[in-house]
Image (cartoon, rainbow, N blue to C red; front, top):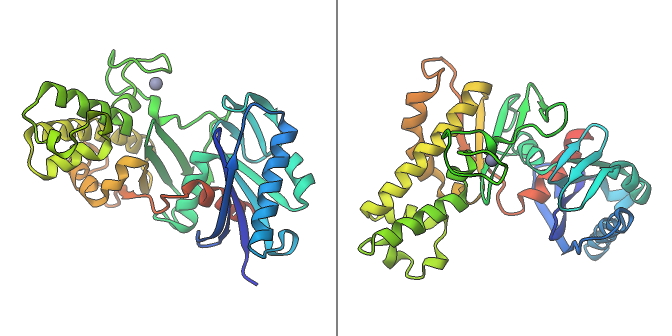
Length: 320
Ligand SMILES: [Zn+2]
């Protein structure tokens, strides 16, 4: 029988679980509200009940058909010992999630930070498959990152490593809510691109961006790209500036790690090849190893919708 895993995407708003095969295909999934705050034991029971009903409704036997359960969650996570050190959403400290859930499930449970889970998924079955050194950078509400180095997750000694959104790319630049100024995510997040697009529209009533998106409140990370594709000068300026900052942060990371592959995820990566084509000349100009025989390749992450579930399941596959 084929090996199956449960992946649990544990967020502050929803808990989503899916039964996933070793290739990262979701066979079925289900989610419930997290409904915080609640005590640890109650949340653990919720996770177990969700997985149990997911199996029952889809005619799987939790004990016999499922090899392991993987959990992906934001926060500082010690994946080796299965402890969530801190997670602001839950308000728990030193949460022994692996030990507690294994008692409920009766099978192996593994836990990892969600960005680390995402790079594990890309390395195990995605667009960094087989790489020993790969990064993921997610361009969403913020900018997140995960690193797989020499065949292992690199989390930092205190499990708070790879906060790539908070490297400064503009000294004394935009104020970030981390306390620094000029952080990468203040320029490269999807939310930053959205705000910059809105600001440019307000300044330029003549821009075709107003035809693409007449309601400025509905502007998103796609709007400026659409405008540039149509040849609008204002949109082109917004996107070119965005790409300049994005490339700066990415080259900083490439110059530190020189990974085989950098996977881009998050909303902005929906631009796919168009985004990669815009980035390439910048990377080719700035990468310290631009003349090396082997060069870092930038790709779009394979796992997109449900990346959280698949990543979590792959943590199970990786540890099993
Ligand atoms: Zn910051």
